[in-house]
Amino acid sequence: MTDDRIYLAALERALKQRGLDEFRTAEVIREMADHVAESGDRPLEAFGEPEQYAAALLGADQPEGEADRRYEARTSRATAADEMEILAELGRDGWELTGVRDFGLHARRPRGSQPPEAWRYARRSGIRRVPLLAEMQAEGWTPCGRWLTFHYFKRPDADTPQPHIR
Amino acid sequence: MLDLCVLATLDERERHGYAIASRLDEAGLARVKGGTLYPLLARLQAAGLVDARWEPGEHGPSRKYYALTDGGRTVLREQGLAWVGFARATQKLIDPGGSP
Image (cartoon, rainbow over all chains, first blue to last red; front, side, top):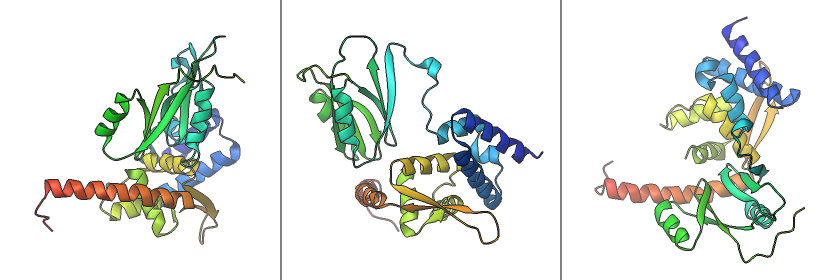
């Protein structure tokens, strides 16, 4: 087996371990083989360690073991067209946005029987981050993620009635 | 702003992954590694900005092509303009004479 084949086999294993189905795994391998054949790159140099590449490709979050046990976590998929709607619903249900990565909305909510605090979200668009942050922070908003020139902010909404837990 | 640059290469035409990397290289940007490019393409696809399809190869196995969606085109136009404005302002400040 050549080094490249060993690499591809390791990547295949890593992708499957992360729950990617057979079909999609084969596509990833085929696309990488295509790239390597045309560029002349070695997979390890061009794509890094198989484990890390699999994690990057599947947008993996931090390892489970490092998650804060006081909170439950969820990731919602969104697009530039619907993310504010999704955030409004998450906020009503007590989900606090902890990060935005390419429209994966990462949120957490305290565990326990207490109804969680509701959150409000805002999005601003701009290149000049510093004045924008200052302006929003003056109004009590905390930055909680960015993507391209979109900046997302959160604020606990104490005025919102107790959220309805589904 | 690699995301925007990748979207821009796809505004010209649909391309496969290596062709995107080559176009960025040719445009004078650093050579983007596969380990950076494909996760980025996957994220753009998940965000609905890019679509992908497999095309049977002429001489070999099939190949994955990426194309801009309408959403991707809108984001490229809006965000691209913001960046161009920012780049112009920066250039004016750093190089007021506008050397060629």
